[in-house]
Image 1 (tube, one colour):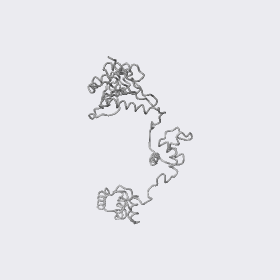
Image 2 (cartoon, rainbow, N blue to C red):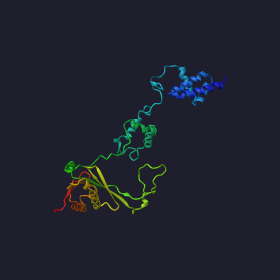
Image 3 (tube, rainbow, N blue to C red):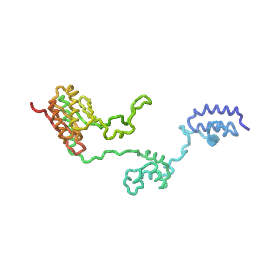
Image 4 (cartoon, rainbow, N blue to C red):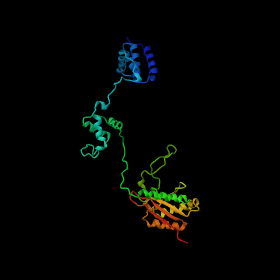
Length: 335
């Protein structure tokens, strides 16, 4: 006997109202199965069509209701042991085979099939399949994480031999800084920053602007050619005041430019912040335009000392691990 249209209409209303409030697939399956049993012959097909479910799902719920049994504890959907088995349960040898490919101890093994290939998920899955462990790249990506592995880049932690006096060199510089600051004398650090090409050139990063109005820049930076002008930022940092001073040049990073930046800082800020100063301590690294090897650096500083009347001390930080910490003292000429 065909199910009446009025009954189907009422069924559609109940399903539309009830199903969204059920928490899991088992509850929805049993609710649909209950409606199907009440309808009798043809109920499974009618309920499946109205609810948009498969007939096998509704029929499975009917079998569960007819079999009886207590509700599952703890909000479970399936009984213990139900559902698909994990890949490692189905293939106990899968995990050891995978770990043998990604363990750090295996790197450099000339017999390893992945010695000259990238350890991508596809390569690992293909190699495991060749070894008799059929597995997908998705599973390969999940298993290492579950066993304490993660994607990591190289860590730059290996160094050469340490100079036996390296620690003492930094202690000496630190003591010099403390002595100058305790006496109220200025202490600055200077360094040149990365050169930047001038012009409307593309740079990484983003900034807030009106929607649809980005800054228009060149398509490629090489359009400016090798003759394009560059800006050279040079920084002076006052350790005690925690303030910075930047000069920008468009020529070359030279010792004259480095000392000119210090001179401008002293004229604009230094002599105002330290009116009673008689000495100046400069800390720099050992390379670049302020290298301890450059006579031009020392000559320019000597000229600055004579001009300002300051006794200038320079402390060079040791480059790498095996260079000495050098200090250069420049005093103004005697009256």
